[in-house]
Length: 361
Image 1 (cartoon, rainbow, N blue to C red):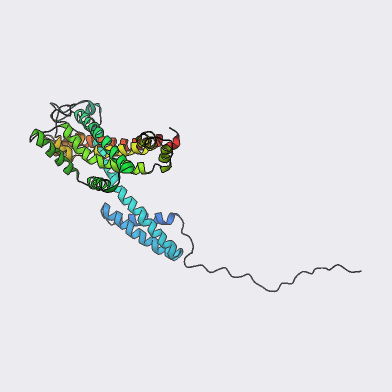
Image 2 (image 1 turned 90 degrees about the vertical axis):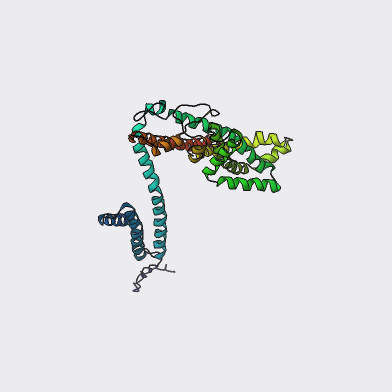
């Protein structure tokens, strides 16, 4: 009879566990998350204790903190991770440095402009006002009138030019128009004002100042922005939509009106809104073409008109005696301009989201 095999326990052979793998020089340990913040905070504290100015404190914090972080990270984590931390520190520091003047500007304008941000500022003009009091009602109305007239001039011309370049333009004429639009995009605003002034001087003589002159000057700046933004948006419309309309026998002009433009309405509206925000704060063209006025004028074809940028400029450069009241009005006008530009940018985002094709609206 065959006996079943019995297993005997294995005797220990004296084999030890393998040693832990050696740490690669490029994948070492890991620094705690608070270490970079502590290094930068420490360098900032040391620079501040040395009595350096704000700019020097920021520069020393960025340079010394990044160097200390690199040395420590290289010793603990290896060269690859140390290089990554250096690049990250440089990018974040560049962002922070870029935000410093922006934040300081907004804080200063809000702090100084809030003193006169009251009902009188929005309901009174400067007619007969000397010293304290007065407002910018005439400048606000002038800005709205001139900006509205600029939009009426620029949007049809810009949109039709963009439609021609995308849908019809071929050959030398299209290339020439594209080149001129690129050139107009970069011209200084003062050149646009000189052009509008020279144009009206030819017909009405020297010394002419009209609100429509400011609208023409701002249109020179706004048209290329509208053309460029509308052209890029129209190019994003799928070619299949056009070909489907053509296959159904729809004429090209009706395809553009009924298919292309409704599809691109969100981008077109956003581009127009941003173009308005681009020109609403221009000062140099309006200094030449519109001038300044203390009374309210709603007619852009009759005499001078006040605008917010020019109003702020003259209140700051020619404040009168005592100067404090005019300077306060200038800061409030600057704050109002920032609010207008910010509101237009927010409106552009809302328009883009509301009219986007994916929302089904």
